[in-house]
Length: 358
Image (tube, rainbow, N blue to C red):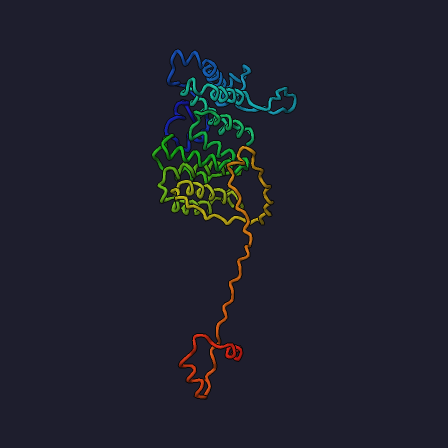
């Protein structure tokens, strides 16, 4: 169990992730100044009320306390018989709910006290007895709404979501908690976390939280292992699941635990460079017929600047050239007269000869 609430902020282990007792023997709040105490008075009062409420937990009450009428504040008394107690929630659950809400409101005023309150509230809701899975999940959601919530609160909420069959939401919170453990936002104890996971797989029960606890344990083991060895670790855990008695006939739960390994491996893969996808050809749409443009009227101011239109050319009749009569060459004859006449042509031919040629 948790003796000091400040221990929840130390190195994370499977025992701190799922403590059996949350009632503290003492609480040490760091960063207390007069200004913070004055501005964060509501958060300080909520812390005192939560501590006083958990002081009357079941294992702290003796027989004399019970005879004097003191009742445990962490258990829920369902109405039975002549009992007039009909509260659906325990007194401790109401005090812790008020604490985590106040921590979310005063996270900037007093960060150390808000972080301590958020972790204490999430540890209470994950370990409290008598809460239904839905009530457990609602309380953890309130605890993680604070900006000061750490990796432990994220892993607890992931386990509670898996217990309520909200697998996708639970996976998102588990991956977020694993990322916080990897980047140094939360410290992880240097011990063999695989031994705690093997013990959880061996001694699991039919409680819905058993699957969630095992999933959160897988995150702790993977965070303490190098990414290159996750595949070997997964093969070893598959063999352990095959011999787990409470997983016999629960193939869906076994597949869910395998999915936790795959999601964490995928989260640690190096980001591949993005390649530009080929563009798809655009669908050709039939073009509409262009409407004839209206003739623009030239304004009277610019009418003078317009270029003059060329006059249309008109066909001009050219006088026909006078035909010059050419003489046809006389045909060559075999007579001697023609030959002699061709040799000595006359400058002015006679009319009779032209008429013959014509």
